[in-house]
Length: 52
Image (tube, rainbow, N blue to C red):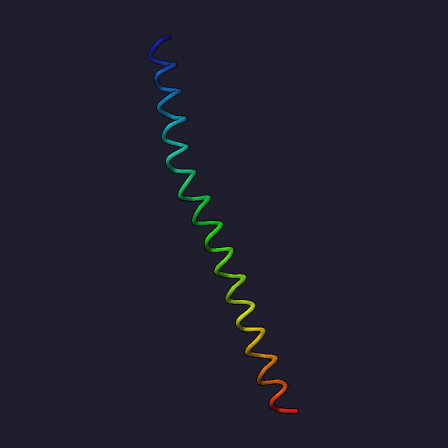
């Protein structure tokens, strides 16, 4: 029984260590994607305005 509790604790700790960087990476990549999209749109509108 004690082994099971230890295993659960180990699993929780492991999932926490795996989860935190993943969430951080996910958040970072989403922010990066939004920035990229914004930059692309700005560039596109600038070139579009130049044409007119």
